[in-house]
Image (tube, rainbow, N blue to C red):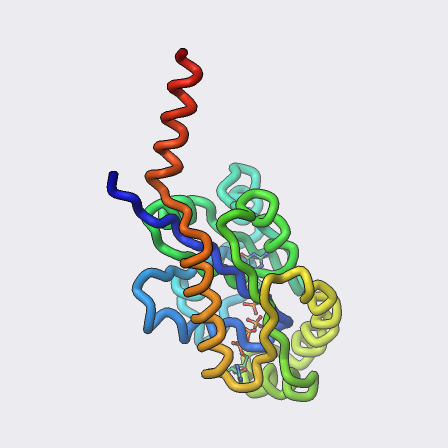
Length: 212
Ligand SMILES: Nc1ncnc2c1ncn2[C@@H]1O[C@H](COP(=O)(O)OP(=O)(O)OP(=O)(O)O)[C@@H](O)[C@H]1O
Ligand SMILES: Nc1nc2c(ncn2[C@@H]2O[C@H](COP(=O)(O)O)[C@@H](O)[C@H]2O)c(=O)[nH]1
């Protein structure tokens, strides 16, 4: 029997601006087995964002239709906009043995936990200080002053949940943080060797019991 590893669902969450997208980006160039779950959002596209690479940008009626038709694995309202994970590609990629990185908030993490805990490893990224967090949001220069204030306020709520994640990283040095996430993923690959064909093999054994 040719046993293939089932992919790991790597969830990275943080207050806005702590650096999860930067850390995520650093993983992709170096690892051919990891895919990003590209979310849908009703947020306006930032100038440096590309449709289908950073997000699928949709209007609210389209988002609501996708929700109603069960196309979203999880969804949440975050900082006044809606975000959701399209379901279609996730199972296909996991079964093919590819790991998937989810850049989602705490509400989404909880929803994935309910469905897929055995496949998941979760990481929470903290900023070194709030002064630095504000500086990062300002340097990124993609959000208005009002949006930055709102994201800083929401950081307090998001950080309440840090201890519910498997790992916590203080993102002081970007390269060091990225290396930690790479090590976490490598450990998850070793410790959760769920095997796709083995799942099917066990199902087949169970079916044989049903037909005894
Ligand atoms: N360790 C670091 N040191 C200095 N700057 C950093 C570090 N990590 C990320 N940054 C910078 O901080 C800004 C915010 O980072 P990034 O967009 O990755 O955050 P995020 O957590 O994904 O935010 P959001 O949730 O709003 O999408 C970016 O300009 C990025 O280049
Ligand atoms: N529950 C979900 N949260 C998501 C998803 N995609 C992104 N996010 C989170 O939203 C905020 C803001 O993101 P930004 O791109 O506007 O800065 C951030 O915390 C993301 O992690 C999703 O599909 N589901």
